[in-house]
Length: 294
Image: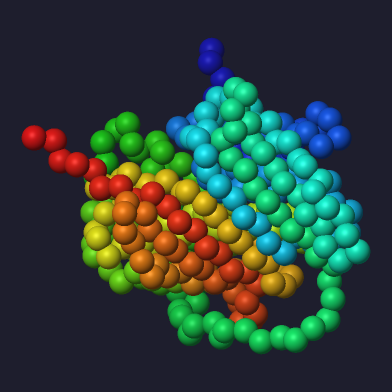
């Protein structure tokens, strides 16, 4: 008699893939969970590479990262992360990370770490938007639309995510309407994690930061990944400004100032619920229209 496979909690799964296997002093191995087997999500590679960098730094906290996606990753092949300790200074440390599969680079990342210090402060204020409790989750929206999709797409569409996403102005995922090139979403890890260190919460937020940002630049065109456009992240940059927990609600303010030449530019600001700006994100992505077959 066949035994029923145990359902894996998506948060536990995320925490698991961020616990990289150390195979040498500055080399780590990462895996893609079976539930994400269609393709390697860009946020996974960003967060795993940041974990590798963090494990070679003692003291300073990451304040910025800059990354390029070079080749599509194969979810069935482990990813080797090689860290170059570029510099260890009194205030700053710099790391470079290369992600490799089958002997080829698929991704690279540069990260800078900084010891906390006092200085001048100002910030752009958080927009006034509805509370997350008053909004419908993306998971609920997908459940209501799943029957409109062909069978091969349903499993990927309905895969349970570790991040709760609630958009102020959600776009119809199956039949996207034309909207302004901006989006306000609340994001939060679906359950609390025991870790209190900022390294852990930085890596989880790095994962989440790639989940909706690229969608912003196609909103005015009434297309998305499921309908009308080939989409892929090309590069990703992130700056961390203050302390936060990724398992508490954060407001992700996203906007796209320009799309041209098959690419879309996107910027994001991430606020704690008390209005403190804790991160800024920038990303350019491929948004190539599907050509109709005649």
